[in-house]
Amino acid sequence: MRIALVAPLAEAVPPKLYGGTERVVSLLAEELVRQGHRVTLFASAESETAAELVVCAARSLRLAGVRDHLGSTLAMLREVRRHADDFDIIHFHVDLLPQALFHELADKCLVTLHGRLDSPDTLPLYKAYPEMPLVSISNAQRRPMPADANWLATIPHGLVSHVCPFNPEGGSYLAFLGRISPEKRPDRAIEIAKRAGIPLKLAAKVDAVDLEYFETEIEPLLDHPLIEFIGEINETQKCEFLGKARALLFPIDWPEPFGLVMIEAMSAGTPVIAWPNGSVPEVVTEGVSGRIVDSIEAAVEAVQQAAYMDRRKVRAEFEKRFTAARMARAYVAAYRSLLARVPANTAYAQREVSPLAWERLAKQGGGQVLNRRVEAINPRRNPKPACAGRQ
Image (cartoon, rainbow, N blue to C red):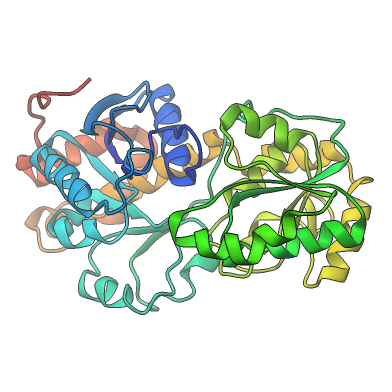
């Protein structure tokens, strides 16, 4: 299939530092290329990919100091729209805007929603544009949405095995990785470490919006011999940081849509100790890949037990459920399912082939069958020359 992946412009793909969504897009792009699909990535110039790259920003916007990304994102979507006929599938990883700008192309588009969906301001958009197929990254993420939302699939994130290599030994400290923000509850992590008497290392970025919280609530707690604040780290540093930890603390206080750091830790063999909010019960297998707790006291007990957990079983759970290959296969199945939805208002759909028959054809013949079906229904999708400016 000819697939367009549309990434956020906040970070490079993959990101140089923090950036969960961009990392997932990178892993998906590389795996789809490996599986033989023709992939075009719309992203910032610093991106590195085996796919065809369309540069939509000279530099990743966060590191360039750009705080409002609306204008750059709209310009990117205009570029995607100009070349929409080049693709069988357009897969968006930017929320909200595609629904309004691509709704009439919804039969070849889908949006993976990476953020929380419980903001009252987002619901009118999904009601206004019900045509756009949506992918959730956990079942928990779906809960605030309307009952009739147009869900195509739930597809958990995945990683390649070498991103965070397995470390059979672990280490003696606790790890906190991500953002310093109220909903991530670094204060809980600090309290757990102090009560357990075990060192804690916090590798986290501080966004401008959270600077006051950091300075008033967290920074005063760092003056303790067990607590070490490292700051933001890169991909290479992350591997060692997670692999040498006794456990990852994930003491969140919000409906986490997925929590990529949990499977990064699992990849390294490091158990996860987490509160049961959002996706956590879907990601952590209790007693196998970690412990799910609901109090500081229970977390302190779990920290002590983590030293005796079998890190091989933690890694095995990752290999079984959260690899990039599995994620890519699930997306390809979703793409085929979407393309097999014959539009109900076409004579072709009404007279010739049912959606169920196209599902069977998709399984038997793959992308070539689907492409012939798409071109037969809608000749405007015939391939056109690739757009200028691609790398």
